[in-house]
Image (cartoon, rainbow, N blue to C red):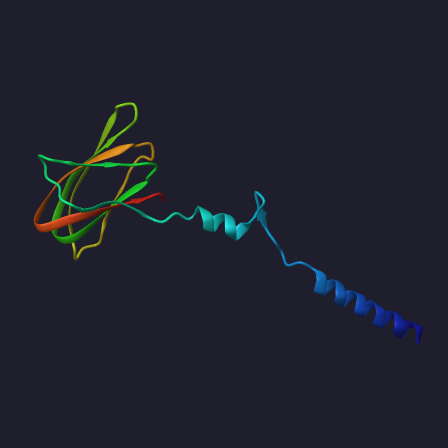
Length: 138
């Protein structure tokens, strides 16, 4: 009988401590793990809408910490000849793209240096062609 009381007492105490136990809570710098990485996810930034470019008159776009540029054609055809990155010290870097972007094709993505402060886009748009430029931080 005494062993039965001990067994029942053990089961009651064991079940009550299980009910009070906290689920695993992973912390990263004082915040929950999933909250930390959710806040670090950054949405794309629209840098230019309905931009028309030409080889004689390039378009200038200011940047701040972008890793990639995505060119989306709104309508018509656009041809991206080159992209010239400018840096805060006055240096420039030329990236030859030489690709066509249409409203029916996949967007064109160009990897750039995150230290770039601005970009000149050289190309051409035909007809009603225009570009949207989106900056991606990841």
